[in-house]
Amino acid sequence: MTPPDHEQRQAQTSGTESHVTFLVEKARAGSTAAFEQLVDLFQEKIFRMIYYRTRSRMDAEDLMQEIFIKAFKNLPQLRKSEMFQGWLFSIAVNRVRDFQRKKRVLSLFGTLGEADEFDQLNASTSDNPDALNHLIRQDFWRQVSLLLDKLSRLEREVFLLRFMDHLGIAEIAQALNRSESTVKTHLYRALKKFKEEQALHKLLEVEAS
Amino acid sequence: MSERKNNHLDDDQLLWAVVEEAELPASVGAHLSSCPQCFARKERLEQKLARLGQKAEIFAPLHRKKVSLSLDEVRSPHWWSWGWRTALAVSLAVILIAIWSSNIFVPSSDTLITRLNQEMLEDERFMAEISLLEENALPSLFEDISQEGNSVFDEEFMEFVVPSVEDEIRSHNPIVKGAELC
Image (tube, rainbow over all chains, first blue to last red; front, side):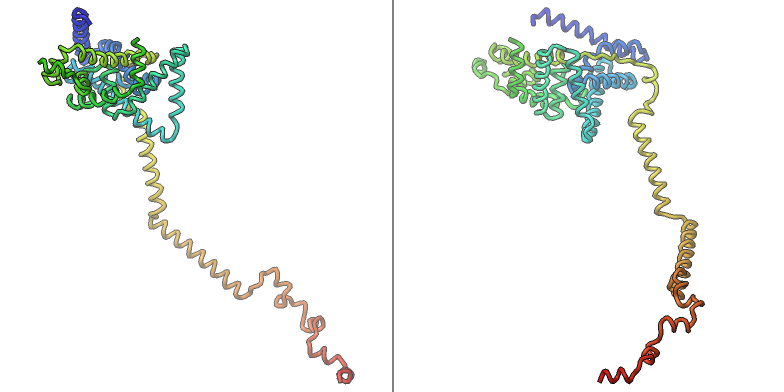
């Protein structure tokens, strides 16, 4: 990245951040329109964040709706407006964890597994009818799953938030309610396991070349 | 510094450089910024991680439903949500079970007396049946056939139908019979 590019991106980021802070202030004052703008800004991110963890579009849509409603209700509890993203992700992380816990309990009765697979298949084929692309996509998510399965719960969460949700260390610490040093330690451990995942590395190298 | 130049970053230091470059010791940080080889290694790893994020974005589906902040949903407390409904159903079930078990296992004094009276009456009825059977064990159906209840057949008639053994012997000729025997 050339220095002017970097400066331009930094300026854009800080501009967006100040805009977000401004919208948060307005929403805290009771403006639904301002919160709707915040939804527009963050819904893609939150949707993807949930999808990475649930791998179900329908579940991700339902949970996203709940998360934003919860955020809107609890907005007055947010102390610093500039910490909105970390705070929103903390709501999302907790909600997804609750969802997965319930799902695990329900799966004991064997009622959920098939429905989810169907949902995944349905989503994949309907969004991308091209068979080759579908296979590439499947292969990618299988490799990611193989990596994530080797990580502990906290390592997985830290890794996902850092490299797939693009949060900073401070935001991750806020979202997980942990210290920054704990986050860094778990990130280091997760990276060590990522480095050992040769198949995923090859997949990412092939894409680069 | 020149010594440090030859000591390239090991794998752990490289990972820490990706996690947080500022966490590295000053000498390692200085080497990283001056050594193109180590910097390239770090860049390669960071690029892979960035690519992982990009691919995840590309391979994630698009959401179809937009978030709606409908006023009803925002304002109304979720008193009828899944959790509340479950809690309500569970508490109702507990109350019903408690009422049912209290009736079964802890009868009131009135219920107890009534039940005892019923049992006593049943016992009395049963004892009356037993004493009746002691007096006449035969059921009424057989009373007509039996001797006791039959007044039509008198002693004489019965003697005719079933003569006594003594009379039967008397009817035979004892001398002839005796001679034959000797």
